[in-house]
Figure 1 (cartoon, rainbow, N blue to C red):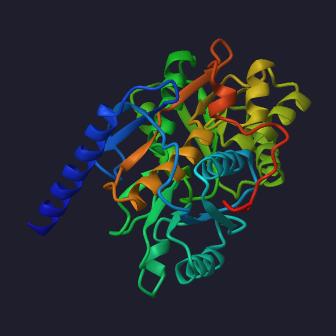
Figure 2 (figure 1 turned 60 degrees about the vertical axis):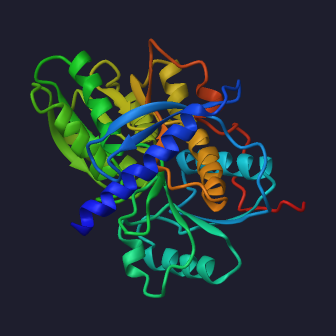
Length: 354
């Protein structure tokens, strides 16, 4: 009974947020997003919205951001969006990276610092879903999940996309374009961390009634050299029709496929977008990529955090809709919403007084 009451309260709060967004006056400066229900579930219903961002904040809020790493352009794009909106709203923001998905203790230490120092809220790009369960002291500040899922009763807002759907979208592309009995090799990232397991589950579901088969699944940290070794080992003994992986994996695969002269035999698909993946699509070396607008995610994360600090109810699962970039179709706004500028270097601190 208590659980039903809790779910009912969450639904009402999400409905209030949805109505508030729908009645916001239209503006040229709106962001295309979707709100998904039920919260923190694999299978969700999405409703598209035009979100009008804030133009100012009520005070100089101090926001702490925790990230798994800044080793690839996905999190660099998130960082760029965070920084841009923090500057626009004249906030103080400090960012800490754990250094990788296996650095649980380091991120716990960073979380402890943020909770014990003068920050108003925490944006948590968690290295593991149960990170908050591993933290023993009380959590006495608002925590909003950033990109990755965080399983904890105090988390009722997450900025990002549904990674199960990221895998499902890629699977739908394969169902539409792959020949019968095609084989796919997966290189999705760290095992059961980030969105790798959800991508695999979504892809598997999309291919369930298809003749396309997943021939092997490979996990490693998001490191190009590690991926290069794995892909070379695979291609030394087998030739899949498709390689689907993280952007870092597919960036490594482009050179390997060319070196082995397999361009006509192996097609490459990326589970998310990066500048190198976009170049690969333009050059017809990569067939497909999901695009979850990481710059927009970063901007939205700051904006939603400020709204909640200023008294608005939780936003639930909210983030950009998933787009598809293909050789025959590249979105016009991909550079503004999805990728940081080519010369951008991640920033760890934004001071509103500067």
